Length: 124
Image (tube, rainbow, N blue to C red; front, side, top):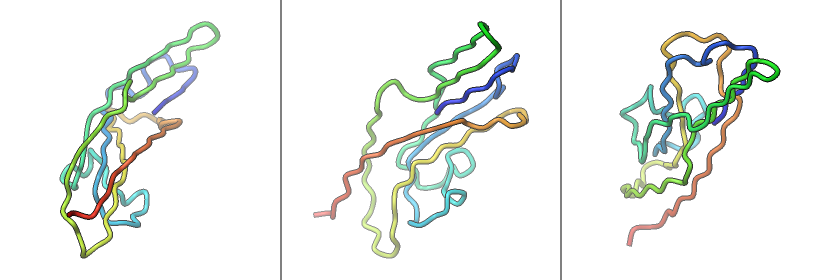
């Protein structure tokens, strides 16, 4: 995830917590219905973790511009077993959520990306 902001004198999001995870939930959920790791800690999470900024740049050459990157320097592997749910169609969702201590007008991630590979098989 990344954030870019110009003409700001302080760290833009202030005190913050960023959490991400993989959740097992009903298929067809709208983006705002998908469980999120801070607001829905009791959802069926396959993996959940906090993410710290790994790169913060402050450029003062032309203006005061912040470039902040959150993420992992390597791919992380998770392994899990789930029961064979025959009642509903269940899927895996990648979800993230940021909590800010103070209100920050206009603060939003400028961009994010994620990839997920999953091996799903019928239990033998």
